[in-house]
Image (cartoon, rainbow, N blue to C red; front, top):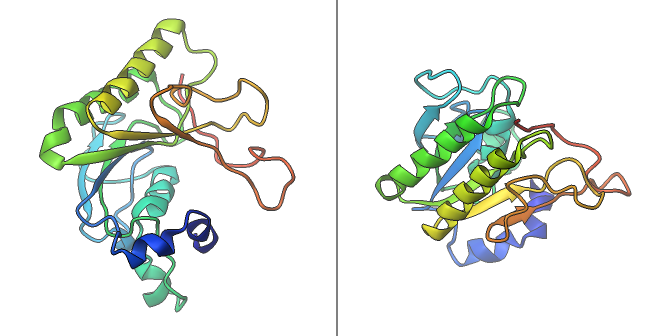
Amino acid sequence: MDQARKEVHCEALEDLGLTGKGVCVAVLDTGIFPHRDFGDRIIEFKDMVKRREGPYDDNGHGTHVSGIVAGSGEASRKEYGMPVCHGIAPQADIVMLKVLDAKGNGNTRDVLAGMEWIAKNQQEYQIRLLNISVGMLPSAGEREQQELLSAVDDLWDRGIMVVAAAGNNGPKENSVTIPGISRKIVTIGSSDDGKSEPGKRGFKTGYS
């Protein structure tokens, strides 16, 4: 995280007092573990997969992503005696929508239900950003693809900044997954410092 924060110039933002305080970020993923690095900032959790109450993550990816977004780094100092290594916006609030199962897979219905919930509750929770670190599998039908693209475009039009992953299929041409191909939202790719080609390693997430 220290290296990633330097790449996106977080220090300059922190010097201006911008830490995510007062900002709510919604995340569509595998769930979230109530780790001490989140404190009391998990302000809502909805399970679209198993309909369970209370935050949990039976995979780990959603907690990992949420830590990048808003982990405070408290555990690194208090439990491991390391320098504090926190997320990009360590004081932001989190709304987690669990739409993926223990294997990191899911279905379009649950993802759309999560987006519909965000649209209905945007004002109550003051949701300003949505992170979607998943991508639709190529086998999805055209109707499903269009429904998902329309949903992310609608959230953007409502004033929510939507950030999606480019997917794990690169760096081939036409390998960006849906919803990352939307022309309205922000799509993020990644690279591995230890390899010459980006996109060859990483956690496999997706839904069909």
